[in-house]
Image 1 (cartoon, one colour):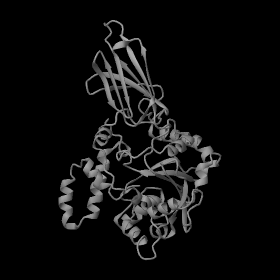
Image 2 (image 1 turned 45 degrees about the horizontal axis):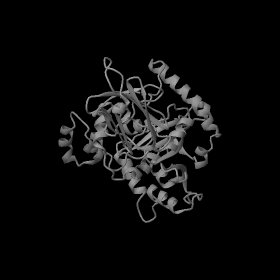
Image 3 (image 1 turned 90 degrees about the horizontal axis):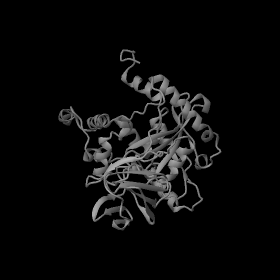
Image 4 (image 1 turned 120 degrees about the vertical axis):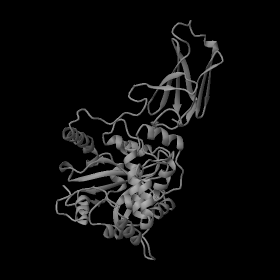
Length: 398
């Protein structure tokens, strides 16, 4: 589609919406605010979730006037529940498009601060926002121009000629909530053109929200190996791409029952989708990246004191391999080894010299920690305090 296709901007925007491209204009925001305001307004997503927490463990949401989707808390003690996308909002923003991100974004406006160290680490690795921090910064600038008055736009444009993204700017940009979607399975001819998606806090990892192990298990059931990390509470929704993209019902039982047809077919459909993308882009053998220290591949690390070591992890434990002496030195004297295990720290000393002191990303079970010698290396094994947790890295600060 070119710019000289004869479409007006409004027609071009609708053409993109009909094909699943998410576009939220200032007009959309005004429509959403109007649909969710007034004395007869529908419940917000926060109000629905709060009502669920007050109900019994098996009762479902009594709000049924809308398109059903699922609330999946990170806390495994809390039940998975069905919630509703209000028809009033669908009518205001529809008929085409995925309306769930607009409805739930306020849920992620929790006021939590962003961890500066994690932000710098992930930004340096381009692990944020699809690997394109500069693009996200440019989008933040566009959002700013869309919301300020005309008199402020010139200054804002000048400021945004070379957009960069700081943690404070990111906090401001996501203060109203920011939603990321993750495709469990995409619409295709083989699944009746229906896709299922996880909706999560786009900056959940930077807020240091707890891992959502049930969301990771759901992704693994759909063929993702290793399972991705999801942080904090998430939602699961379903869309149909025919005749145009729109939300359709999915209930808690649809994601809890692993025999459901959509979930059984998902792994093969995801493989076929990836193959199609590889063919279209000329790439071959494209797979999702492994998490650090997984798949039996040791990750190299350097402590603050300059000493190098390596580490591995699985869902139950981490393993550190720490060289104690150089290649030319004599055998290791076990009596000179001192290892201290703390709930979120490991300290290794040899002959009173600190070899490793690492503040861990998450907690370990100190009663489940051991060490042994492998020639000149000290091999430390620590049980994770929370099983099923894959850490994005070993150290808390990166």
